[in-house]
Length: 562
Ligand code: F6P
Image 1 (cartoon, rainbow, N blue to C red):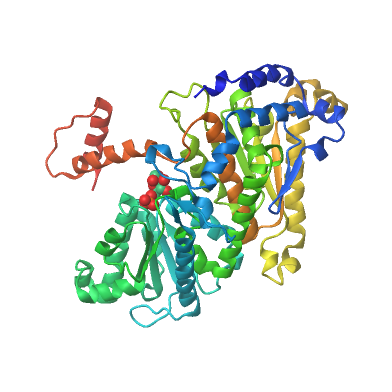
Image 2: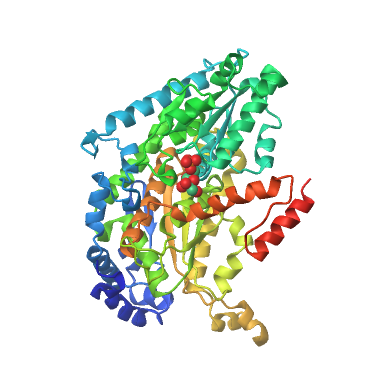
């Protein structure tokens, strides 16, 4: 494989960068009055304005040529056809099958996977309905009102983010909590005020071996058995009486049937399966979204899948230069590799998306935070950026100072909606909050305008600011942003937004020649932790063979732990 930086298309971009770098967005807008019209796109309910980027039409042409030269179209075809594009793990990355709402089959190793996908969705819908209607009863005969999702990483971030985003759609009597951290405080605070007889745990783990999830599930089972069956039952989870209680209060989402059964969950009735071709961070539309489906109901969940599917279709069928995920990917490459911007920020102007950045961090950084190419050679070019951000307008009062006047170039994605989320379901919303939304969006638009055009020193002076204060009050501008707008945050628009970022990240991985679908970088820390744990808790001072720093820290902890 030719190194991406050796491609003539890459080198053309490098030369082109020298011409573009000195230009200011003010000049670009002045010279090209139709710029906003030229640089916008619509897809799957989303409107993207990318005119406030440091680009010309020629930049976009060069970038699209790079994408073509890197085989983005062929890679896209391979992904949608179930080919084993996750080469290090020898499996497909076929999350698009999870939300394939067409009647088209999708094949893996000669087998159409769609019937299995439909079967699990059906099983989930039946279960969700039983909980929502109060038919599913706990061990003491009461209906379930609290769901606790026990999972971490991709088994937590997706459903937790989507639950927050779609809270207005949730069943009024059912609340969902998400516990991920091995820190016992997380589970303790989630359980604190709960009625065990009305609480159901969904243990979500693809591998069913993840330390945090299994520890939390084991403690939750002890808590439940102690509360419903008495303290002596807590330590006998396998006895028939305990199993009966567990069966009414625990279900699992996993690919590992045996491990689920060993835990004491009925793997025939109460396990929801998925497949090794679903990566954790791409798994929200699989059974991993079960807690979300219970909260919002299967119809709304299916609406979310429709949104995903609409963006999938757009990505699959649109030419590269009119393809929203591709355009976002290429702009990201432009700043990461040519402007050398190490980070980018995502700022949703929507409180419901308060967990969206955390979700995207895993999606992007676990996918593209790699330094080895598909061929195993070092990637001698910058790959995945550091992603950060927070919701507007809170972010304005936290880190926008740096965005406007700091010394870093931080490209940003701004996300907003024409109408407030809660107004979709609350009749009285406008009566109380009518003026909030316009103010929110005024801020979004103002920020992108300020970042792009700034406030030159001349203008500051004409406002009567004394000379010595002028440098403090001027804004350089020329800071690039994308603006993404949709009608409203709904299950549909959330699904298409997630798919947009998934495909953007995939395209970038193809161009950087890395595998976006494995995550070997999380393993080393896990292995070392399992070695250190016995050294922390052994009653006798153990011989320590680490470096002097780690040895010293272990000794300190041993001295101070209760
Ligand atoms: O953080 C590593 C990781 O493997 C993620 O990719 C995954 O989402 C998470 O751990 C949880 O894994 P599991 O679903 O197997 O418990």
